[in-house]
Length: 231
Length: 231
Image (cartoon, rainbow over all chains, first blue to last red; front, top):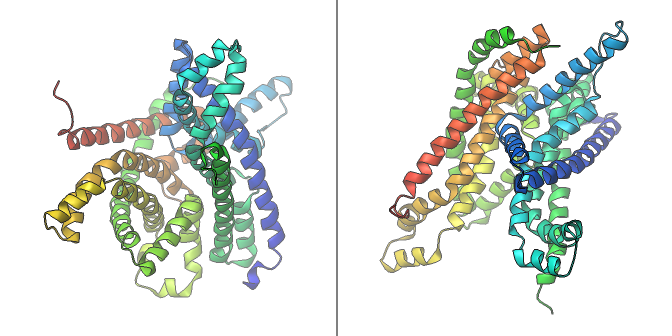
């Protein structure tokens, strides 16, 4: 364990990067999921087709490929654009933090699309009709009736999506994000203790998963508080 | 920047050279993982705490950490330990292929055993009681009543897990294996054409996903033919 001396702070900052990616990706995931679900439930055939294509492609292909495509694809496109203005430029890329967060959000967002779609369909039609009858606009109905009713239904599967999201952050080390796996690789370079260093990474991720699991349990309790039997 | 069709036509056969390795990883770890999952399930539902507790810890650890970290611990980490290098398993663990199989097997077993448990818990109690009333002993009830129904209940979730296992095989490329993704990454490093190569490979993986879905769909249909209404 002595090998770990001097690396704890690096692991700490690596964990901070994991948490940051998680938060950014979570916001994007919810956004992509809501847009996808809205498109699938809309009457617009083009929107439906695009959303179906989105869920089929991103649920059916390896995560690492999506990540590599977005990182290297954006780099080659950005470089080409930059060279129009300044032919001297050799290489421009999106920072791995943003390319990575975007990629994993795109992947988990495709799962969230299906979850949100199912949850919106699970909202009793009577509630929406009642809101209409009370004179609420479409937007008001969405914000005050549909969303509060659907998130209770979406929460249990969405908890699993959050776990996928935190675990997918590890992949971003492949494109050079300085998170915990990256720290471990550096530490191994000087200490030559790969087992110890990677076990620490595993323990950190286990900690994150535990926090998310407990948070989702607490949220579920909160979401269903109206169903609790009064004591 | 244009889409290079000739490069795509040239690269697809090269990437398909890796499909054998991808399928080997998939089928071997799916079979071994299923066997291990059944053992874990039996331990989990045995009702003996000294069997159930280690199983729960195993499932918690393997579902709570990223598969990439598990692969790195096994491939880069285990050789640090002397007893691993001295053991009879060293010839397997020395090779990246053996490590990939081991990591994928251990990972998928944790998920599959939970899926199977869901199936077993979903079996109607009345059926088991009927079996007991007919004089069947517990092992017989488990084999002839619980198992066939549990398999039917678990099959849809299991097919999703096989698809995520297939997607995880792409991570073998991170430990030098030249599966389809490994070959694609080599080609991109040489040609610097991420769009062409990665998108065509995503199409190949999508076809594999579709084939897995169709096969399971066929099995599900066959297994529930007694409940389907005659049309």
